[in-house]
Length: 291
Image 1 (cartoon, rainbow, N blue to C red):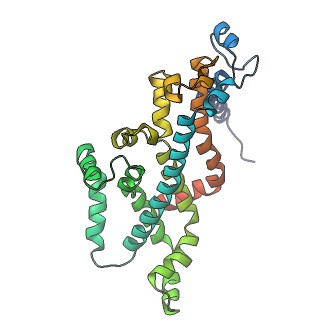
Image 2: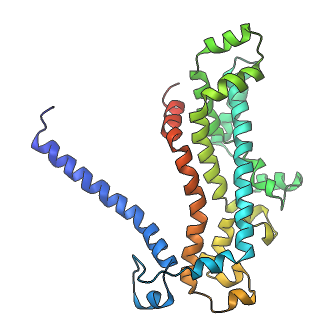
Image 3: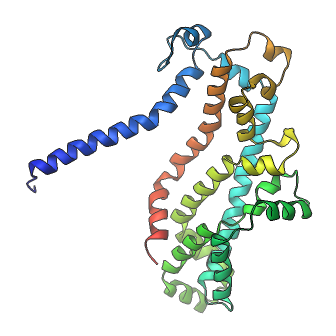
């Protein structure tokens, strides 16, 4: 075993303490949100900082889960996340594969992609395009305008370029066309990269807020992030969650409702991560380092 100097050991100890402190600082907000969301009114009034509830209460969660606007916004966001991620992967993957092949005008199309990274259209031109195409107040307005992220396309194209060309040549000799090569050879070999970028796209759709405010006028189509704004920022949980007699009868403290809403809006995307985690680091590194 290599001999380590006292200075190196001291650095390791300092590094471990620093990383532990950063980890605790990052986990503290989640612990606080979790604890407050399960606290009773007495706990909330008597304790300044709640790091663990003395008595567990599920009133805030029951209050929220009986709210039709909240459940509807969860369903809307789930639809946008699933459909949007599928659209993103389809268009990004097919275009990246086309640009990784030696096609006519490849440099010109690559220039157009890189141009949009440096100079985006801006909010008002994009809004006018969404309006003129009839997507205004439609859920597809949150999906189609962001169907391809240019930076992700460039990284996935680099990943496709790293796949040995001999595989394409062998498949071509066997009579396979580009579509069959893409479906049967390229996609199975690209699972790590596609899994990593599907997570990026899914998180982006789940956190969609500004576009939902901009393009959706009907409150019945609001996403979970817009409902969270009504509950947390404007601090009107009763108005945002509905005003039925069942909900207005002895409601829990607004703060516990806010924290429970934040936790319920965060948990679904956290559940997805472990299923993609094994591909995550590998996919990002393969796509970004080689080239």
